[in-house]
Image (cartoon, rainbow, N blue to C red; front, side, top):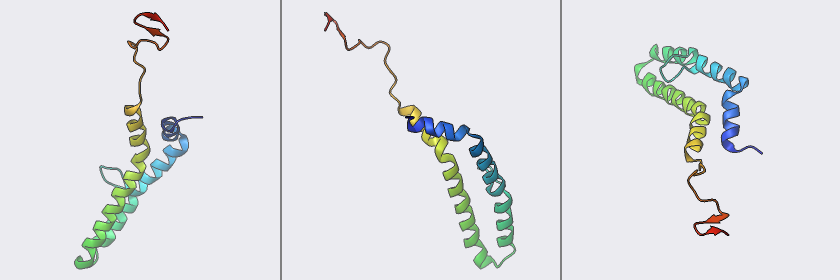
Length: 103
């Protein structure tokens, strides 16, 4: 049985995830901006009435931010798990030995 970090690493490096991520980035852009759907929706709102456009633009930006959070979660979670892993201490005394000799 694999642990959560191994599962997340397998997901992140799978060809299917890479294709999915590419599609999301094409539609919604990256943290740096862009994305066909994002730009299209923002352009529509910019052509509308100013009173209604601003709240809708804020909603689109919030949606983009949440999409990025979901897309980044597997890598962030895997990294957090990696940081919390207990690594064996090479200087530790084995449990079968004590300072006075074998147990």
